[in-house]
Image (tube, rainbow, N blue to C red; front, side, top):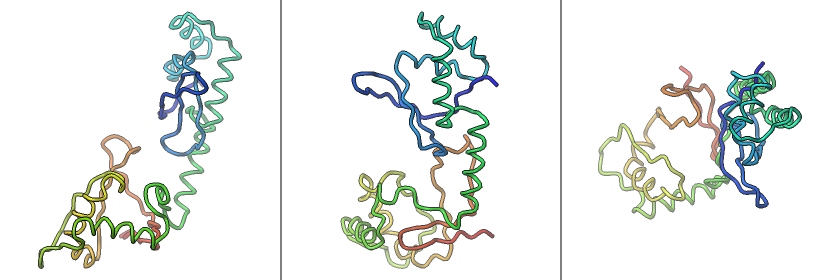
Length: 213
């Protein structure tokens, strides 16, 4: 099977005076990061699954004028594969295991709790209430029923004031709602698709059940 690099996240990095890129897995199947030195970065574009190892080495030399030994290429490929960044059987097995683990879990844990917001329930409540207080607290207007809400897609640290203003106007309707349909941004789903889940959602306050029906 010809080496093929998965869709990865690449970020430039200077490490100890050496420039290069850091590759990570946007799906989160792998938690490892691989540093590729700047001199070897042209190699990544050649890992598209259409070339065998000999053709990859020849293509790298034609593009850079630098010889690439078979052992160096194998070393890079081994690192990428061990980090599950190649489209290989190793990644396929890890992906299947991750999907099965997710499906069997009793609920979906909050990924950003403790990072973008407090993970302690009392602290989170106080923090969110502070954003409401900045805009006058619960400022629902009379008996007006809010059927839908467009909320910013941004972290609370930068968008907290806007969140407070928007949700403050919908507070009464939100408390009375029996069912909420939440449409969120899917950063890593397929283009043009909609990703649904039967998972329950765990929050610092407890589990929010998903209406499977």
